[in-house]
Length: 285
Image (cartoon, rainbow, N blue to C red; front, side, top):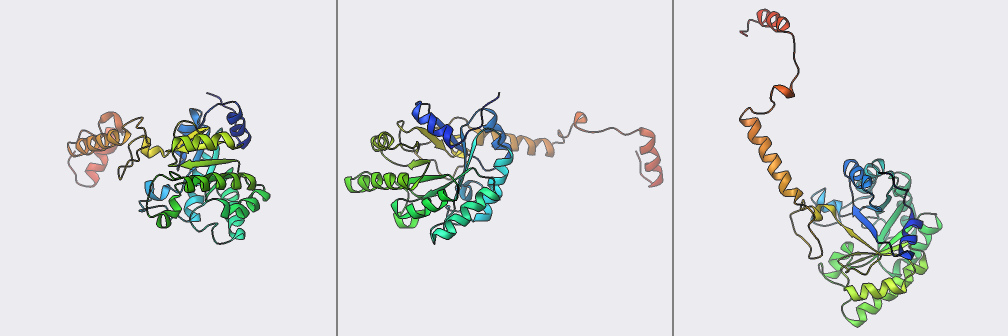
């Protein structure tokens, strides 16, 4: 199948045309190639790789080197989808200078085509500076995994008037600062609908209901590969984790029972060569 190369302009047009945007996380070349081949609009190299790929307890330990390494792999496997990379914890929070430099590294070294950062109005100056450097920025509001310690855990955001109003104000502020889209995580569906209506840029939901301009999921969640926990908002599309366990178990049995490798999995050598070697080293055939 042939698809047109997706850009931030593509995503904006999809919002205007009411054509839902599809986004999934990707962290490696092989997975990226598969996703790209079926026409996914955007691949997010998320800092969630810390948990699902590197085994960290949360996203806070992910480094710029981690993000660059995985983003390069995804970019090499992608021809059509937009490649979006997360800015990891403390890669932009300390200063505007750091924000621009590290966003630039994700583009220049990692070959990302846009970067994503968490936070509201307080990061408007950082967003403006990155955009001035000709790097598209996607915002992220609602549940902010990098603010886990400040929030006190994972939970729905914006349920009360004050917190909902702040979320709306933050969305408008970062839109003004220049974001090209906003991810809404763990936000009540009707609040996400309100945001989608008032914002000019696309909204991408994860646990934010059906009214956003698009959706994103961690692919290990939707395929039941990551088993530590399953968020309420995840739909299971295949039990790949179970299939992997069954396949690995079958392999173990076959090796131990000498059923693998079979004759068809090997390579032949002339009997005379083996006979000569057996004689030379005193072995019986």
